[in-house]
Length: 321
Image (cartoon, rainbow, N blue to C red; front, side):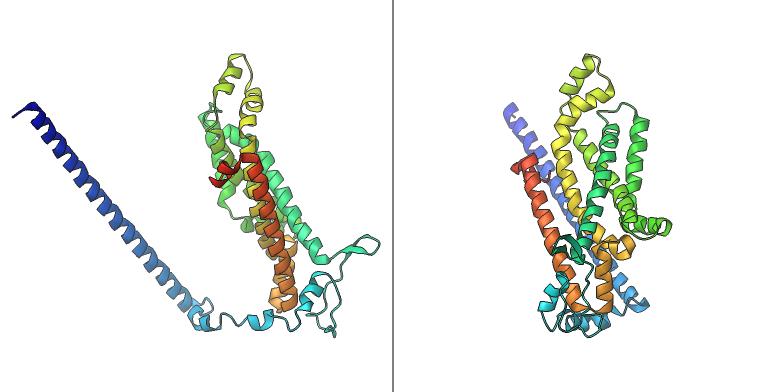
């Protein structure tokens, strides 16, 4: 048999074996995927059944009444939503707390005032901004220490990484509840809780960015005798600062939402007022607060997205930088 024929036969057999192996692996992967999805669905259905049987408000029994809340959420007079939002007296106010709209105005100049709900929204925004700033200030040095290409000590890297994982492990609402018990309710507990979680979350994102930088500038500074702090300041930081800023802006968006939720458990701000309004069934006040929240979060998201595009470029932004 000619050598070329033998070679072609060997290649054909190798190709066939490779194709058979690939088909078996693909079939096995599909089987395990289908099995995993099936087990997940069974677990979810079983959990819902047990929860419904145990208590959980008898979910399935109450399912037909899921839209009953509209009966009290929709106000009889839609103008009451705007009156509640801007601290204007309602003609329906006859001593009822439902129409006794807040009058805690903050007068800025003569007849110009900041309505109480807007002041509460500013408190929520302040919590988000201050906690994000705390997270950024601590996450930056931690991220340089945690990066394997920037810190030679494996023990130091391990300690910092585990510490940031610990900060991320506890939900903000749990940390806020703990500090609220220690420091009393208010924005301070919310700032500490969100700030600690932001250190862990931003630190992880930052050190992953650090591990992908161009090391030539750092090596050049090392060659001329620069110390570690100088190498981080003049070689690493200029490369990563735009991405650091982009992720920090993204974290502000997240923290605005989180600070609203934490406000409902004693963290102050608009979340606490929204919880009280819902629990008392005040439709106009609830809609006013929801409208203010939605508008604020939408504007923060749009401004953050625009600024991130300017910092990292359109292509990097679309890739999730």
